[in-house]
Length: 429
Image 1 (cartoon, helix red, strand yellow):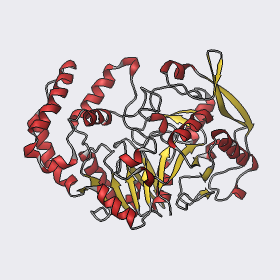
Image 2: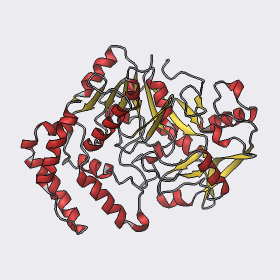
Image 3: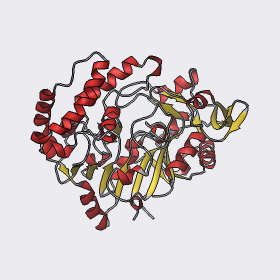
């Protein structure tokens, strides 16, 4: 049996939560390997709706769920999210939940810096969630982060705090803010430490043990490939690598562990926040897509920008992330359109491109080249087999996989876990 790595192949918000929940019910362990509490996964299980932004989706079903070292962890949010889930009847213990003891922490000063920077950026706003994820990653690579393991040694933290405060005090002064209150920060860390340390361990060791026992591991990505700090629409990106290869470094397992890479792809395109979006529709069609798709961010509630499916972007994402197969979601949102369009290339400065350029000016100025197809009557919502789909909807799916040069592994036709057309089981070699 193969392991499976799930990533978003657009700008995030592709419906990963439902797919991960479906796969987690068959996995032995689920691992978050990057990002912070900006993930935003909504799970619908019967009558219950669970909204997660930090905890791996497997926790809802009692599957061993692990936060890997590639994640930046807000301990106060962790405590709050655990309490909320426990209030919904989810049991969380060391038996089914673990945190990498080398995870960097998101501190209150990170969120403050995040907001100050965005407020000062004017037209250059990135569109962050303001939750401190970016500044926490900066401190990680700057070798001044406080990590989960440090919570057990707070009395020996002086030298680390010296490095941290030397950096942040200078930044805060630039924004007219007072220096970091070290004593208040330490007091907050002492108070929250027990909530985190009860789950902390070297998870690379636990995962190696689980893997050697033949367990199926599901690696759960956050955001999407187009927000990858290297391969995304820079600088309008997240602060971590979102591509599948990060599952190895962000969990402590080698690259051979990632297995089947499942890219989650909406049947159209959405984006939250600022940045280029070649197929964006700022008209009635875009509004219709947003209303039918209930396009509001799980974490922030922000309205998502909507547009036609961009095969160039998805093909590029699949190539960069080594996607084995895609899960196509929200096909039902296209029900009833007389015609649907797919972007097959771009025009830029008189040239035709079959890729998305790296430079921001090129990204902002490409013009989409569209292929138009007939829409379909009837509904695809709730379909569980190809026989349930209108013929033209099947043609649309076939054309998508041709253009992105990646096969469709499954089609999701509603938020309900069972409303899925399975073409290839990702967990089977």
